[in-house]
Amino acid sequence: MVIKSSTTLRNDYNLISNLAHEMDDPIYITKNGEGDLVVMSMESFEKREELLKLRTKIMIAENDRLSGKQGVSFDEVKQRLEVKFNEEIQD
Image (cartoon, rainbow, N blue to C red; front, side):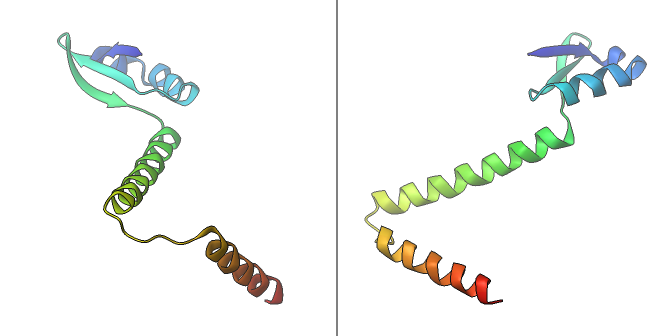
């Protein structure tokens, strides 16, 4: 975990920017010794957002499974994928 002061952010933006791009972890910015902000590269932020979306979808699927909702069999998924694949080849 990287922690930098707001003074560092203000006085040495390039340092913070370079750190954010070199690391996948967020950089914690403090103000008057207390946590204030979190900074990360756009790439890391977008990756984190996609991961959160995926986790949400997995959680919904798991809740459906636990509640007894009927899913799709492997054979049905395979058949659907083959149809899609064949459609793409013909286009």
